[in-house]
Length: 478
Image (cartoon, rainbow, N blue to C red; front, side):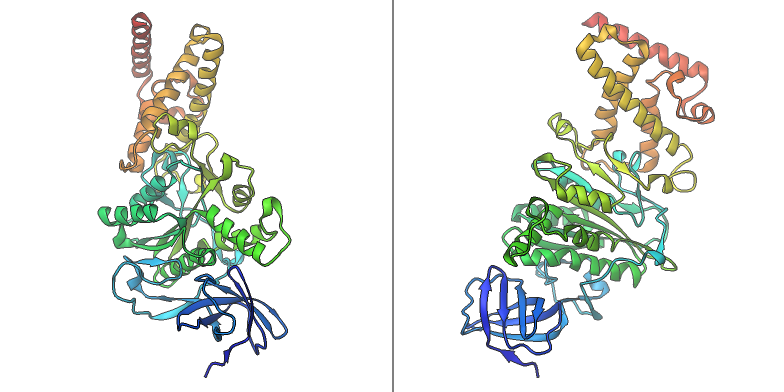
């Protein structure tokens, strides 16, 4: 029989102090019964002799100190797991919200998991196809990787998240694949958009959704990513599935962490965030990866909005230290109507070289990726130069690079949110665009690959002549 305490002495924000407690443990689950019989949940976050500080998940409104009783359950907050989780929608604390039946659990798992032991980690080396050219072709996602998306207020990161969840796949015949999607602090309209999109496209059949809304208590927001990752760990390491975890928006998570820290009267760090923000984020990000001698894997895409588009803000700054690259959405491309507005130049996947090449994508992937990067950078510089000096000041090769940059944004980046390109289509499109550049400038591609995919010297010269005639026609029209 669990002992019931009626010794609540203080309530501040989402925090409650209970005195005279015996045997309470850190992270222990607590049931709180209000004077009207309503039950709420919480967890122990601090113990000082016989005093326990409890975080209340559903908020502290309506609590009467004298009429409230508290029971300590003796176990941490957990998630009931079974294969029936797939295809379901839950709130931030793992309760079904899709009008479906209660999930029959095989067992319950503590959501406060730990990072994968570095000794047990297997190196990420297998390609995951997202269907988005700027990711697959230039910033390849590798199975077991942590690759965040850095966005800004008003940018369409939700569309990108839904597109990745809808299109992502592991290339293989018998590979079991699932998506675990966790949303934190989003509006009801955003949540409904995700749910409708998953159901309409059929992605719900391989997905598990955890939804924490903006008007839900902040403390629930801190549990949501842990719920999602606990679900992912079960699917990956017990059911041998390859799991893609999408977490949006990590900025809302960090804001909730700051709010709770302030309520606990902790000494603030940078921009008011707690000093343990790095450790807390690492505890989430490092639960992704592959484990030796296990078939399953967890790949993670955290999405965060940079306050004032500031990449040096503590949240993107610390996230960049922990993860293996970043995909950056561009406000400039967004204003031009490019969808998705992924900026290829500052974006980076540090593990891309391990997931591409013959047997994984195609033999020409690495060379074309490097050449497209170089060509796009040179084209952007040529465009900037033409603004200052005029187009007539550009050399023939500069004009070719400038044209390449424009066509790259128009055809390669601007593919839309419902165009699912496989890696072969992305690579072939890359070669088509590279034909704009004179062969002598393709210095980052092996001659054998140029001949195989772009044609012989005669073919290239004919292509260059046609491009030159097109440019002359354009000038005459002007």
